[in-house]
Amino acid sequence: MLIALLDGTTVTTVGDYRALFPNTSFGPNGPDDEFLAVNNAKRVNVFLPYDAATQKLVPADPYIQGDWVYTVKVAALTPEEKQARIDAQWANVRLERNRRLAACDWTQLPDSPVDKTLWATYRQQLRDVTQQSDPFNIVWPLDPITTP
Image (cartoon, rainbow, N blue to C red; front, side, top):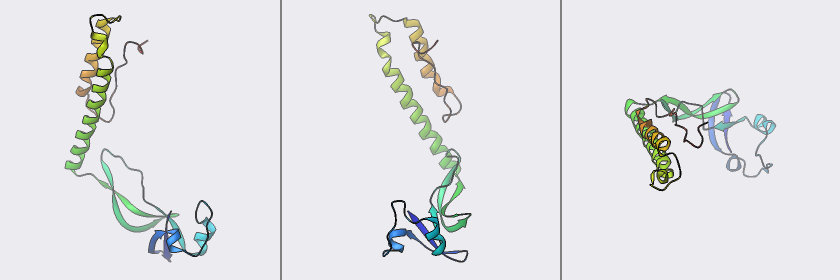
């Protein structure tokens, strides 16, 4: 666990609690709230909620916010970064589509005991998923076995 040592409202040091207090024994969960208060320390958080499609976490000088010290801030993605994330997500969609297609290839064999028309329609719907507008919210078709 990372903690920050404070001088008033200024963060002076960030480090692992064992390194900052090498001669102190702690329970399995590290320092408790009372220990932190007595030693002018706060827990450090290296995460903030953000929208992965439009934002990223970037390193920041440690700052206090409420009961925590943060070492990251949320920043907007550049247009290039947004496009790279979109491209990567489309690649993931195509991989999943190809996996689903491969899983039902057998349905198109001449001796398969299924309704080939239903399965051919499903397979075409899989091929068409890349026509959807948002790779982060793909609506996948249901296969003929799952379809009510």
